[in-house]
Image (cartoon, rainbow, N blue to C red; front, side, top):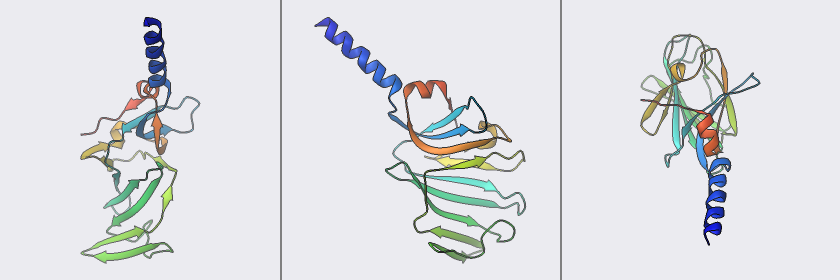
Length: 169
């Protein structure tokens, strides 16, 4: 009987260590042989924002996303106050653009991504990841000048221990 309990505990420990069971936002360093994985554990909240200061306009851009059950990322909207360099001044197919009180809002109908690359520029402008009432300053938490593969995926306990948890405020 004790051997069965011991064996069950060993199997459970192996399962918890190696099987991906924790859903997380992951930022995996690119262009390196030994990438570091930074993560934020995903709770029940399925929406998040990336807010950055446009380096030319010097105004904030708010990108809103939602995590789907498949762990894909649905682009919801983008808000900005200037349509000059780098910001869309019209909607394309599957999008709608509105302008109200000095703010453009570009909404996406069905824009779904598996992942995307996020570059952490070496400029002193805002780049925040907001989730679950916490703000993560990506310029402080990740390395400037590097690119990261951003995705929502399941990670194991071992990956959590080996990775770097982002703290936020």
